[in-house]
Amino acid sequence: MDAARLDICRRLHDLGAVKLGSFTLKSGARSPVYIDLRLLVSDPGLLADVARAYANLLDGLVFDRIAAIPYAALPIGTAVALATGRPLIYPRKEVKAYGTGQAIEGHFAAGETAVVLDDLISSGGSKREAIAPLEAAGLVVRDVVVLIDRQGGGAEDLAAAGYRLHRVLTLREIVAALHADGRVGDDARAAVEAFLGAA
Image (cartoon, rainbow, N blue to C red):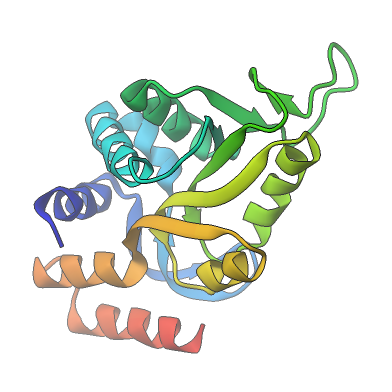
């Protein structure tokens, strides 16, 4: 792992954005790790470095606009737009019944390519849900970029639907880096490996 990504792992742990223990996920499943990237807004320096890590992945992709998925990815998407100079749009979670009633906020034109940006991925379901209104509006989506891949089948799910996943870090890489630093014990690392093996 390069120094920049290793530094992000350490600082995410310091921030409390990556926690080891026993947690109940939204799905109801138990997990030995919990990731809360909404905390990034509280550390502008780390948010800027994360934005640069996204920008490195975006360098190799062809797109017209960044499409950030609400809500956790909106501040990240804004930071990435500022770091890259690329325009940002986002699909609304709820379409307003008043005003313009837009399903997508920001300026775009049908036929343009949007790269979808989110904080993390487990399965690909929520990404496909966010992509649907973008494609319905005439945008082309080929790529999804995340900071962390929880390695829960999301890459495979997206590939089956015709999309490519790009990630800065995997959950296994983060835990291995924290273990090497002495921040995570053998038992905690083994629990994550068992969890990933069962996923």
